[in-house]
Image (spheres, rainbow, N blue to C red):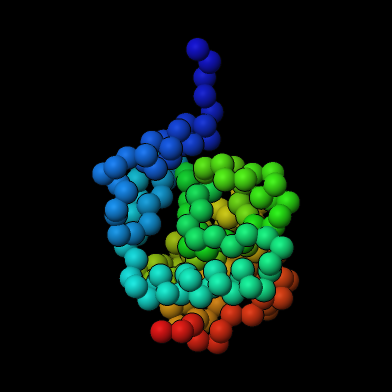
Length: 169
């Protein structure tokens, strides 16, 4: 038998977790670090409301692609799961629903929880951009958002999306 790559090993571990009935109803997001170790983040209802509001805005304002919540992405530091993402029709034609995605969709959004640190947000932003995202958005629970691309912070998104000034709730 041949050797498998670390990315293939993470994809196999991710498939194992996705099919594990003990993990099916966990009340939070599950990710894998670079060693295949499970990391969990509990989510509040506010977090879920914000995810839906952002996903709805992406779906309505960028209809030529696919908005999704919690898609898995193979990164250089494990399988990471942005809270919301948007993928172009080209991305979807190339990757479909392969799990985890071998590259990041064009827009990856993290809805920041009070427990998230600045270092964690910088880390995830870097990982999503390295994996191919064009932009990473960090959105606070109050609806304030920051956009980053490969050049660093941007004053706004190149996609022309508008989020509500305050996310409903």
